[in-house]
Amino acid sequence: MGALGYRHRVPDEVLYRIEDNGVGWLVLNRPGSGNALTPLQRGEILDILDAAGLDVGVRAIVLTGAGDRHFCTGGDLRAPRPEPPRRPGAPEQPVGTVMRALESNLGAQRLITAVQDCPKPVIAAVNGTAAGLGAHLALACDLVIASDTARFIELFVRRGIIADGGGAYLLTRLVGPQKAKELMFFGDDVPAPDALRMGLVNAVVPAAELDAAARAWADRLATGPTMAIGLMKRLVNAALDSDRGEAFRAEALAVEVVVQTADGQEGVQSFVERRPAEFRGW
Image 1 (cartoon, rainbow, N blue to C red):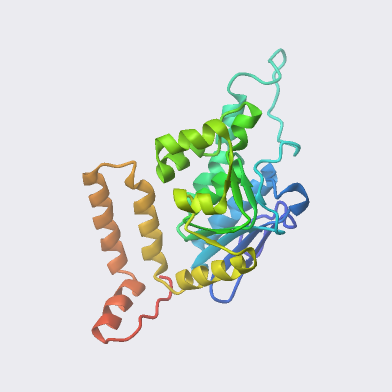
Image 2: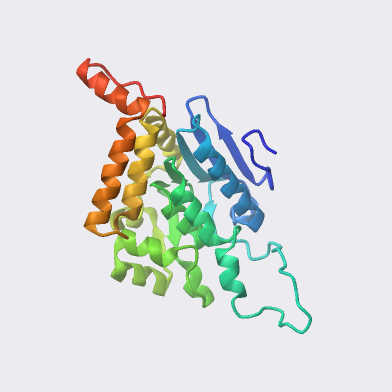
């Protein structure tokens, strides 16, 4: 087991450290392969996000890629995959095999879900090409900062396949159905400035300033009321899937929870005393 309570699957291919200020840095570390993700890497990321969600010492997470060319170029199609048990006489790949793989614990959908369900804010620092599942991994994050050399590619159509890893779900919510169809049908490269204009990313900075920009935002989040931020994340992520009454009830419950926290009480007290709030993350 690792120091954070999870089993390291590929510790050299997914780097993770927690800095003194409570910011976790998660780095995809296969630059020679475009930081493409293997199933074991996906498992490592899932374990890290699960552990970070439970660790009160983690206040924010930055997700980025090693090197200066690729954030993540999607799933590594050359990587070995777990072989399901075979029954005598059964076809090598029965109908439903691909669907079950996507929905499995090491599948693309579980990865996107883990990012969106993590109670800590996750910042994507997109340092280069984000393609296929790599693009969806970035877009699933709560905030996206891209270098001016980054590009986003819905490359599935180029391979004659359908976008997986939540592509239709994420893109429709970010840019609307018409633009989502354009991106998915044509699979054109989207340079970072265009991604900013579309609303796919929050900010674009010079490549040399990406780490500093991500660090500045992460530092701000790490000094904020972590539980309140996590509940706001949950409310926003669910907003398009619920009606007004359901959304308002969820909001009221979240407010009830937060006002009982130490940070919630500190926020009110600091306002009364006319001083800056000092949030501790619980």
